[in-house]
Image (cartoon, rainbow, N blue to C red; front, side, top):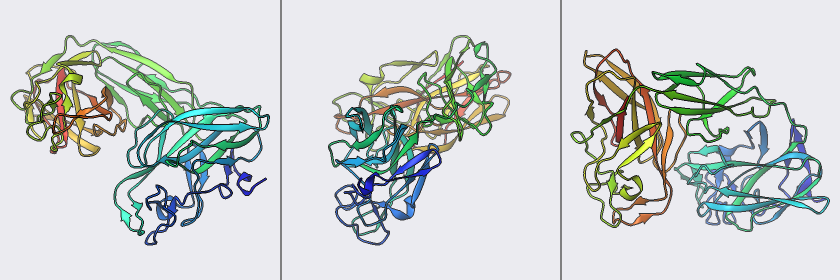
Length: 452
């Protein structure tokens, strides 16, 4: 048995030692030149100051190797401590770009094996791939000289289910230097009981006004994660911290997790909000951003993000349905979106204001949207918005449209994935609306709004 096959049990998990198979210097000391090409082969590395000696994720503790030595693995086979386990989980990252559909193979003592296909995000560009969790976001990495590159870099977590009836022997990593693993845990075969599934109050059903939905689990200390777009929730989904305002027809799905328990079954509930026909809000008089452009034509006036990138009119179309309503977009290559301004609203009494919007130049937390009523009062809603390239699944945020590209300043296609998000705010139906004041930043852009 090599040194890499020994494991240390830490509660329900066994830490896999990488010493015998480590072939990458993934961790460096601040202020010291990074040896042997570092994590990415270009001399860059994770900071030992930020990583520490271990990291907790999903109920397990992962141990890291020392700094400025071979402490990580890529494109090799890692011996595993012989035993029967229910799962193998990894902390790692891709380098030199996102690495899609990478194959990890666990080999058993009986000569059989099982392969898992997993897409892995680059440490600088998290994609939120299925099966991937953003475990640690670091405010910098180390350059070859040991200086800090003050941008955000991430370490990701992945977990694969094993056959608990078989004895593991080794893990064969993807055949590329661009997938690097820094730590591995094996989970004991005895599965913990599931947490109690979340319950919804009020109960799912049909309502005539927006509803404030409370999620609870009878498991003590449970954390609840939920989605509003119909997708299956995971611990990477939105964390429930306050009642969820459901202003339009929505399917809520939620799970509960807690120490000593496996994830609960998925609880699902559909709320149908019948408030009459939605009223589209015209942005014509307040539009001050050219957010939509024609393919092949130069983007005018700075585009959506101020750097002359824009959404494609071909992908958006003239209208989009989300949450049971239809939202109308302005024309292409003209002012068709609004930011940092006040939008007049059609006078009337409504239960919900809903928007299609995005952040640019990074995710923006705790932004204030203020609805002004005709009686001189107002209501302010605080909402975090994801950048159109990096969805964060903030509470109250839904992915209304996923697009395969955006338009660059020349009109060419930037073939990466970009998003448009949906948000809904509950209004006082006894008051008449007058206007909506947007957050005081150019970096929050609204492309369409409905009242209902």
